[in-house]
Image 1 (cartoon, rainbow, N blue to C red):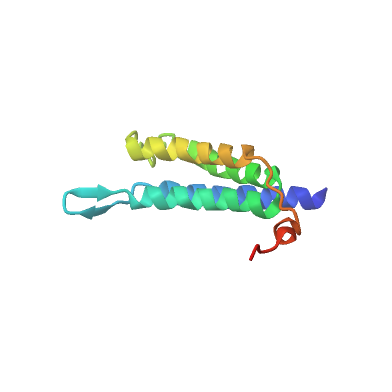
Image 2: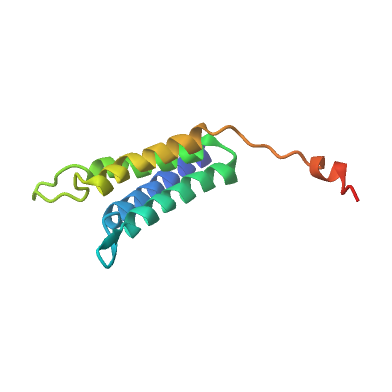
Length: 130
């Protein structure tokens, strides 16, 4: 029981760290000529996807992905508010809207995805047909 609680705390902190870094980086963009490529947003969403999907695949348990999602989405919710000084880390633009909803959608898909089990020997039983 203690091990599960410690794992949950570590996963929430890891998710919160990812959410914090993604919130700060999601507005970064690479300008090529007149085009603006949202590299920060893409990298932040990829980081969230790799973290949550990776935890789901490695642990074969939904709870690891749930705790990571709680950390990520929780920090996004905290940083989406206006600070007492008046600054906003997640502005109300397209990149901000994608950053607010994207990690929640990615996490929901990873958590709801059915369990994939591999059958041992199933692929080797047929053998090559040469």
